[in-house]
Image 1 (cartoon, rainbow, N blue to C red):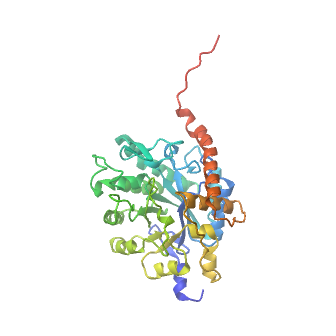
Image 2 (spheres, rainbow, N blue to C red):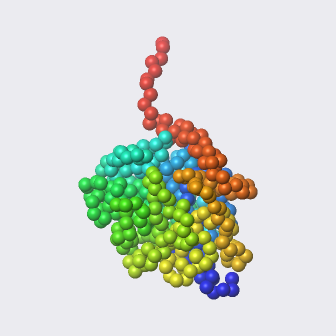
Image 3 (cartoon, one colour):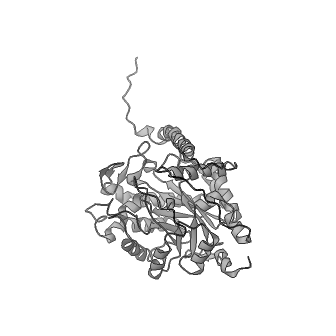
Length: 410
């Protein structure tokens, strides 16, 4: 690439742990919903991450990998624990790190927003509001959480994955603890922002202790929940300042929540990156590398953010769903912006369903459908989840269902 300005996007980045990423482009975490319903990777999922690695990015992050299947976001989530199909996970780690790419697992826990047909929703506090009912985690359950995250992280390292990302964004469990809307506790994990971030810092410290100093450990954090009375930018800046004293290697800044009825930031009709202004405010508070996810649609967007110093990396999601070879094309100068589809009056969740089914097409090496009609995508997405619910419950919940004892006849 002759243009020096654009070449800045393809300079290596050394993380504090010593790992060197080959460029500044990441495939940010998405819930790809490609697990087999038993928590294990499918062939399509393995191929999907291999395609992204071949496409030239530096790191891919697999969204919502559960250490505890009782608080899953969807029945297509992966579950990584000692009785998982570890050979399948090893294959995923190996093929997803082709072409000097890194493949990281996002450590997930949906908490209050766990999917009720397969989970037991529990959050920082009990809630009973339209679309969301959960009970409160006990103090013993909260104390056990850092070790749960740490065990999953250690297993990821042992299986050959390149790193992990602690998920503290988008309204899932650690994000719930940060938010005064979800967190109404009156113990040491509730009240002030110093208390509300306590669990997050405990998780980060225990994960780092489990994986050692040389293993990339990132975090995804909201700049704001975009909910009135929720986690705001002032609190987010306080968390970033506190993270500067931890073993975190990369802070991925995002925003919004999947709270029922809330609009996803990724469904915004904006024309540029969403969180660069916040990243610029965060920059003086930390020496950690920063990444922003959301709204990057063009080479110019991505390059300007890195060249200006607002962030050290850019996180692409839907752009890489539309074209998994985009980094190679940008580097060679042969590609511009992908052509984003336009949807007319999309129903809630419809755009997410469309992109999720596009991921399936990529993983199966099928040509994408040209249609932007959402109803078919929604039906296919929901039908697949419905099929997997029984599989999931048979795998993870059968032992927890009390059954009447049967007296055998002599």
